[in-house]
Image 1: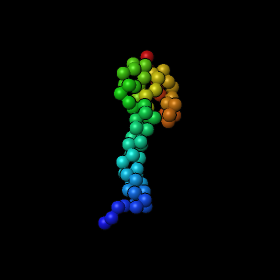
Image 2 (image 1 turned 45 degrees about the vertical axis):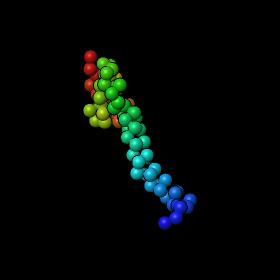
Image 3 (image 1 turned 60 degrees about the horizontal axis):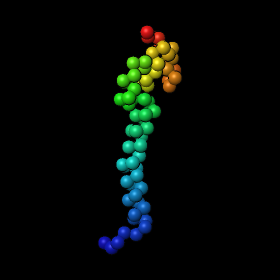
Image 4 (image 1 turned 45 degrees about the horizontal axis):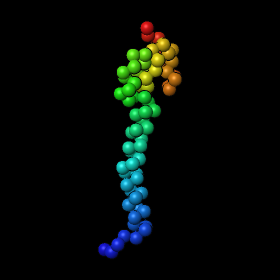
Amino acid sequence: MGIPGPLELLVVAAIFLVTVLVPIVIIFGLFFTLKIGPFRKSNPNLRPCPDCGTYVSRRAVSCPHCGCPLEPVQ
C-alpha cells in the first residue's frame, strides 16, 4: 500500500472528471442553452415554447430553437 504512482493518480482524476464534473457541466449547459434559468421567467415579453421549453418572444411565429410553429400572443 505505498504512495500512489502517477498512473493511479491519473485514473482517480479521470474517474472524478467523469462522475462529478461532466454532469455538472452538462446541467449548467442545459440550464443556459435552453434558457430555462429563473432570469427568463421574469421577462414579460417571453414565453416558453410548448415543444422544447426554450423561452421565445411572445410575437414569434416559430421557435428559433426547435422550429415549432407558435401562435403570436398579444
